[in-house]
Length: 346
Image 1 (cartoon, one colour):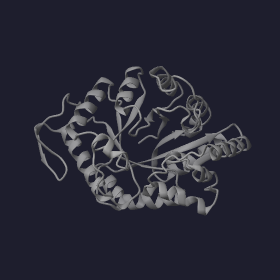
Image 2 (cartoon, helix red, strand yellow):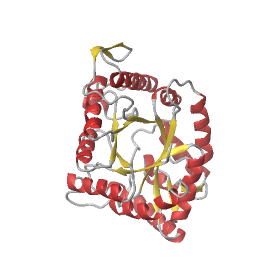
Image 3 (tube, helix red, strand yellow):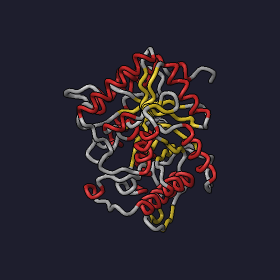
Image 4 (cartoon, helix red, strand yellow):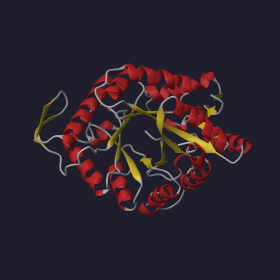
């Protein structure tokens, strides 16, 4: 499998997401399309679209961006509980057909504002069991006809998702989560397990553990979602990183502070190991509220960051979802300075 490089499009109601440009129209279709088109021009395969209750609907945004581009692959996050499996299977098949096979799906099971859209919370084990059943059923609906299924969480009778996908093609299912229940679900049902920015030794242990779990599908692949702060020189990169963190401290960011899932807790715990791990993995942003992929950053020159990412690649990670702000500017900068170094020798 060749290495894939994707970006991140915030899809956020409020402007200034993690330091992005602020102003009217920041989340308009024209603005988001400009980012998607820049990704096409600068060598990126596509982008993960930000999601969560209270944001614009991720599937709708992904559909609009697919319609305005030709090579851009939208990685659309969806939640079991927000979607019924048969409804989702049909919607996804429709978009995948209309876009010529460009749809990718990120299955999200972490806590959200469940009650706001009519879901119930359940405990962690139950949430991931439901997610596994959701992925299993959606796969059947994409590949079989007249499906009968009576599970713990979902039931269908005589169900066929239309339109039909071409034989041998279906959207890739990406999945994240660091708890024991999440890893069992990933090993059994996902195509790609996504990690956040942990040190290489920790991810090597997780990869080995996931590979040892029961699996009946093609081998599980692995991806890394992380912030990459790249400047022409190492000194410039670290000066900018420290300035950004100082601004975060003043602004009191609190991404992901309401609920700390296992994966987020692992990132926060890294601060006790030091400010900089694995040569350039910067843990300090997490002290001031940077959440998810913004908790730890890879900071340095293009050569520094490329070397770090290639070391992750040597662990077996073949999908990278990178980002920094301002998003549009960094699509261009990292596309020109970082991607050519990562693709050398492919």
